[in-house]
Length: 395
Ligand SMILES: C[S@@+](CC[C@H](N)C(=O)[O-])C[C@H]1O[C@@H](n2cnc3c(N)ncnc32)[C@H](O)[C@@H]1O
Image 1 (tube, rainbow, N blue to C red):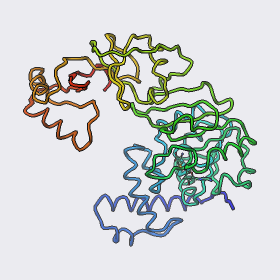
Image 2: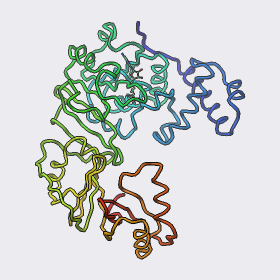
Image 3: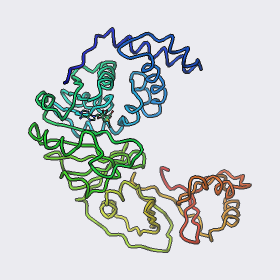
Image 4: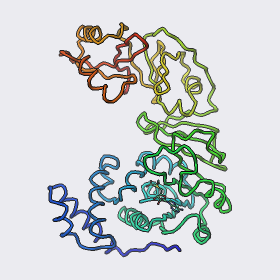
């Protein structure tokens, strides 16, 4: 069973009006019961409108101004693609006709529709398919149709005449997905079925999944958003340009497995600068390619599996690295660090080494005790030594 979603402009307006009403009341602090009573029924129940309004308030951080037009259920918001990533992905997959076969509430689909000539969204949850329809229509997008149905069913498959297929599958909440088996729709099944339609297939996979568990061949592109690993895309068929790549957003700086490699040595001696490496690069296993591309001579100074820090005497100009100027190295004792920070006119310090979240503020408070200075420092730790440093660029 599947159906193409269609709502009249008036029905869409009614939904938006009720969401705006609920949002205003929530912001004014009215009780849930009172708000529910004032919501009129639309294609969504009163409870659903209330929860959409709450999610719209939450979505502001992720979607900025765009959130004013969008509607989400809880899971739709949680798994929605951030606009910066969605726009990049849509540009890379720009084509004639693209099908997003697990489109959720349509955050990625909006950008496919804007970049490609035509788009189609499939979503198994009818509620979410309705939300995707309303989201695209509220933004004035007219080149997209939405189908509520199972992307793995033959009847839906037979409807798809796209030249490019994309799937960002659902993952079970809370568990860290480490195999393809937890994903819905299962990427292997999608690949088997949709390769009859096109070889141009791309997936969004959980970024923590070990590469050997990825059973479909293609380019693995690790995506960083604001210096944090955010996504792992898999591009199959002619969409694959490299074996492995990493892209840093919003700058779109890219490194690939084809960039020349420089294997870094390890050192215990700190030089003038530290360079913290975006974890995305380590996950993609592309540190030698990054160093080769930048042409800098840097050595690995710290590497605890969670954070890798290089040292060198040259500043870098890469969004994959955060530079810090080393101010001084001293024994790691709270009182000694505190004394040195006072001497350096320090006011605040960020800890850049593994410390449990419970301990973090306690330790930071002790180190910052009595500091009255203006400057903000960053503290690294190597064994019994503390490295006090200040930001070199873009931290
Ligand atoms: C991670 S979400 C997609 C998020 C979307 N890319 C976005 O940016 O908003 C995955 C969606 O796949 C849907 N889904 C799961 N199995 C499906 C299937 N067999 N056919 C179609 N959709 C499916 C889920 O209901 C869920 O909404």
